[in-house]
Image (tube, rainbow, N blue to C red; front, top):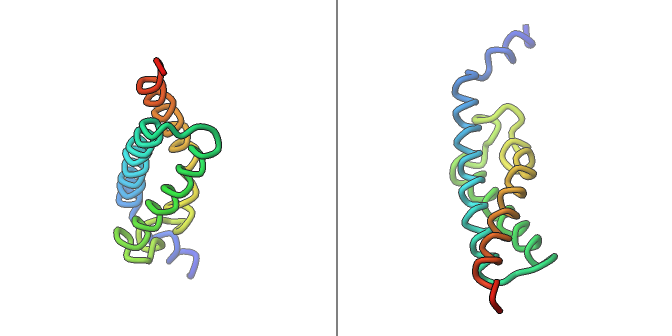
Length: 109
């Protein structure tokens, strides 16, 4: 009986909508953070450390303000959906925008 209760715990369209909204938040903020890193002229490990710091801040803000500290209410695997799963896709977007902005600002130095 407990297994059947777990099946009906989440309404799948709502979970998908929450995941899409979270993906949009991470993607848009990675563009902003990548732009900031490029304009600031961060290179090498400094740029990746900048990304990780901002990733932690943004994930914490989403966790505590959007999820009220209870991500298991909104996502199936709770914390991993908020902080861990989309990190690779967001990192790729960040690196793309970071290098583009760095090249545009510092190409003729």
